[in-house]
Length: 242
Image (cartoon, rainbow, N blue to C red; front, side):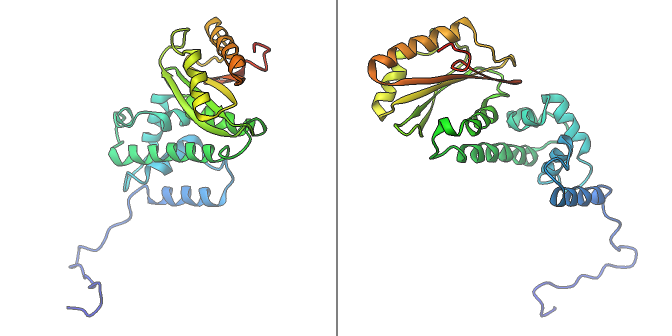
């Protein structure tokens, strides 16, 4: 037995290691482009390839990456997809799905970190980036209320409702009562449109005005109602609807 921690193993003649797997050189090239290139050095499918390396030990992940984008529609949608749905794509196992989900979660936390402790109204683009990452690719509607303090800092990001937004989906008194309970002085309403277009509906405008009216009586200002769509966002304040 060798005195070293790891014993050298000699293979019998004819059992020498064969060449590296076919994807080894491709993986190395992608890694170098990622490390030395700019933010657009890799195409979306190539970045997915690289992320899949964590769950696929060897082999060509390009077909899998392209299949994922074809199935879900975009790079962002892949990261937002349910892990069970991701694993329905041939070549993606539990480890690969976990690797993709971890990146999506990391992106959300990074975006949230950029608005944490900052006056939201002066960090508007950072707020929009955070909301877009979190909501633009959902296949259902989600309603959230961002509660702000006297310095317009976010003190609570409250999930109010999942499902279709109408006048029965959100209750003005409950929204304002929550704000009073936590000492908020202002709110921003947020929801998404899975259809892709962010244009407000009559119901969106009506519920916004009802909440704004309730807030005026209790000293809570509705700064805005932001609608997030797959192709952009709309501010009801900017459209003069509040």
